[in-house]
Length: 193
Image 1: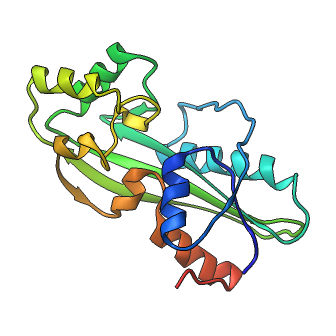
Image 2 (image 1 turned 30 degrees about the vertical axis):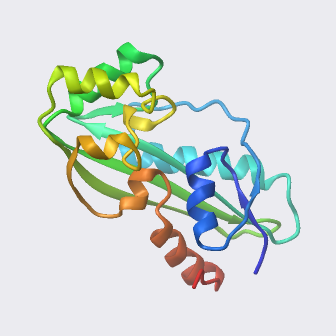
């Protein structure tokens, strides 16, 4: 199999790939993440993932497979990135409280030294339970909210906030592994299984 390069420093994305016997080369993309609020959440996620992968792909030229992902949360037409602090973390969880929201991960795969570039996305619907303010505060005090789009991590204590999901669980964690496998098979003739 071609070498896989993960254009991300996310420990969650690396952990998901490792479960499928992929030990990627990790290269953190050095880009300024800019969000164009005139674009849909899907366009934003795909544009950011493409920018990350393109930046990293320029450092390789031997047919390596560069993959990147970018996750955004959308609720009531508002795009939620990563909270800056506890106050913003509480505000995000309150916005999501007792409602459905969308978790969208843009995914980009580029074969180095070729014109093969694929950009797609995965969308999962997540519904939060009706949470008390006290429970929201206790969640924020776990510090799990930090560095996570939407201010929660479903794979940790954040799972306690969720009533149900419709779609790919791994997408909510931050890397839609099934979509990745599908795209690898369809466009690169590579299977994770």
